[in-house]
Image 1: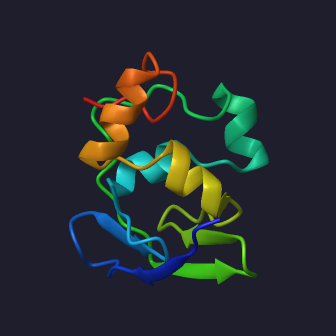
Image 2: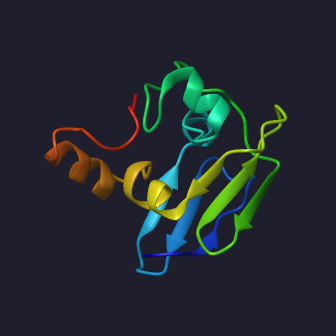
Length: 116
């Protein structure tokens, strides 16, 4: 399993994660928040992934924390902090880079967030 070796700044326009296998993932902050895997958010609409709100919320996390050796947690300004994003979810499902979007399209679009 690939693990993050670098997580970009929370002040950047989007989230960037560089993985141990060399892959560089990009995520829109609003897409990460909209696809929160916590119990409360899952009960609201199912996960992963679900259609993203339009427009995406214009927010950035206040903090990104590593959770052990398996996940990241984003602390959002709306007080939400219970969603733990396992590395496989981030790397294999939610990544919005061109290569991952093309791979998802080749599988019939069954993976990855709904993109606008």
